[in-house]
Image (tube, rainbow over all chains, first blue to last red; front, side):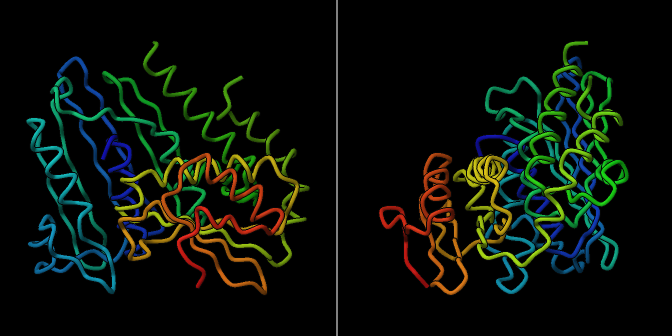
Length: 181
Length: 122
């Protein structure tokens, strides 16, 4: 993947396929500590112990569920070649959590990329799912919570095109501000 | 003012509320962007972004957009399927943002299948 935000989009879709209605995204750019960490959790069905053991095996996939396959193994490989780590935890019936880290200034690290577009596309494709996105930059924090946005929009769906454009621009604006401060 | 502020979101809600009621009828056109790992790796996100931009620009209210998984033709990703009521679905292959805009303007809005980009009709 050319951007880490594309890995994030891919992994989030695993959770949605597993029946999640809330996805929590956490991105921590600790430039001062040379560390980029990402955590993605869902409240979907989770995986059995047997399936968990095979999660980062690229040749394990279940054609009927498509919950695992190339996606996680690509992310694991990307993290490990950048001096970082990867872990996967899951509990059947409760959900899954993927965490990974990268050395921020590792020469092979893909750029984080367009997180605003990743969220826009997720809200466009899965309007019934809620997303809680927390982005840290050197300890400063930005939070985006579709549950709160929905309250303000009073029934206007998140995938309404004008709403999506507005939210995408809003996230871009806040992320820019986060890095400027 | 910040776009994600409460005041801005309220104003946005007022602005789009009337479009929402118009959209309540049954959709006549369904556009599906296939976003499996293979689709995402080859550019489906930019395709979906361009599609939503076109959706915002049109006044048509009978079009729905969906994300779906891999079609099983990973080497021809990004794939997009256009289904118009009463017509055979058309699967497009090797899409990008510009091809998506063309397919939207010609096929989705005017009904002219863009056979140069089509993989197959199903």
